[in-house]
Image 1 (cartoon, rainbow, N blue to C red):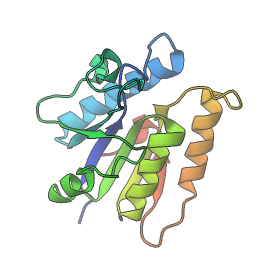
Image 2 (cartoon, rainbow, N blue to C red; image 1 turned 30 degrees about the vertical axis):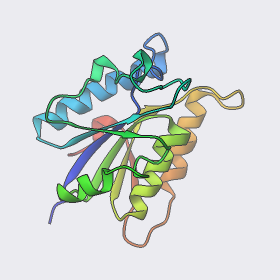
Image 3 (cartoon, rainbow, N blue to C red; image 1 turned 120 degrees about the vertical axis):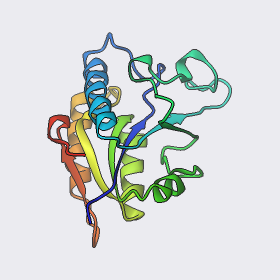
Image 4 (spheres, rainbow, N blue to C red; image 1 turned 180 degrees about the horizontal axis):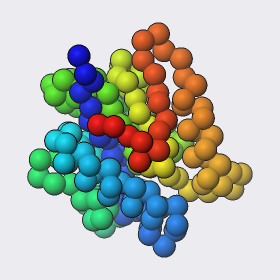
Length: 178
């Protein structure tokens, strides 16, 4: 039986993405292409939107909280809110994926070392096959490592995770097969 796939778009919100930064523009452009391919193949798309409290950079209903308009959801897409790094934690994500018969998730978004990492790890623990889009996630410099170093480190690290029956594959967007 072929894997039933969903595309996860994590925290691609105005407060985290500024096209003035080449890394963030590149990820947005990558996502535009992936979303187009997924929609053409009728692949379910799930947007995860971080919802911070008062004063948080992604405070609910503020301009920065909005999903980036370059990759705005379509009416058929699923949009879920989360409050923790793990997109499965206290959200209906797992139940929605199970109801759709999803066995494989393609993961994109922000921030690499936080929400992307936590969601990949949780997905594999929930017995999903995971495909992390190597050029489809980003973060910010942290004063110790650059964006490129953080992304490269997590691409390498997550590909090494061991699980008895599932894996995390790290692939360039151009190589993703839905």
